[in-house]
Image (cartoon, rainbow over all chains, first blue to last red; front, side, top):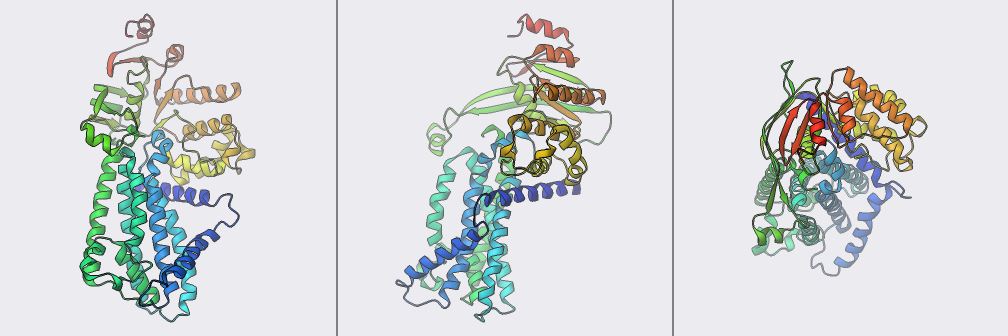
Length: 255
Length: 245
């Protein structure tokens, strides 16, 4: 069994390496795009949204940037993982390897970029004086929740997309709405109380709140929000893993 | 796909294996699924019972659409039967779709590692065999250039070299296997004969009957998803007379 596990991780890392190497091939700026993308988003959103904001958010650009980093990791991973099995059909038809390495390697390659950008982001944040020893705890739990949720939902959509190619289009549409359904550009305190249950269903609420609290000292998620978000994450993960395991036996029949 | 530990067992054992495909005439969509309800189905294999002993060389023949490819895919573990049990003993490597799984932006060496791992090799194993793989494929000069610069013959040679160096217990071949130029065809044929000498289990699905005649002792005729006949080389003659078409 350990031998099988070793092979699984070797294959997973080899696939991740492939993703990383292939991504910025033939680009002039390469790694630079990693930071340039969210930076551009931040400048534009930061400029426009300050017109609408009733109460200003402290360190708004920093607040925005960490949410955008987490969001970009999530949306890029989910969008690419959803179509990954269909995209890599030649691998599926060739050999009997564990199919989950395909979507998970996409997540890992995005995670490498995300964490690198997060480290760069920490440098200016350190001068704000918002980082405390407890920050680490909030940041790590935010990241853990983010990775767990992204893996769970990616396995789910990747498996479903093999049979129902609509899922890919559905995810693309969903991601546009989802961005506004997550407190990235606004603060959680702006949501009217009667709609809060909607955000409780969205695990990314706690993710960005934990990160925003850890880095710039914005209010952390309340226990009810954190609890319901964790339950939603575990549910999605369980459904995703089980469904992927079941469907992956017959991916070859559908691609 | 349960690996078994006891020795002197069958290399491949299929018990009551059936495979059902759903026929999708167009791209499957959610709407179609809900409107039509149940899908049309097609049984590619029905209740196959088959035991192949270690070291046997089996030729699988049959008309197009008889289920040969599905049978090989199920044995290789690429797809799963709808019902029945498949037991295999030892690593299986198929020499079908040799180029599949190469990435055009990666170098030859990076592709060897990726492809080798997809075929079930460990990283250390590939490191040990790297020189042998490169030498056999005869691509030393291009090993650190991206794969999109390779000719199709070079890619096939590399694919073949990786597959045969993964040290399979069970080897699957398709058609006449014509890889590369005359020189490389000779070399690859010698390599396959080396597998014969090492008493590896070999499965060949082909329409080229002379090739099957030359290599296989046991012949299985597949027709309409069932095993129509299972016997020795005499079956080839009967198949040629068209008894099973």
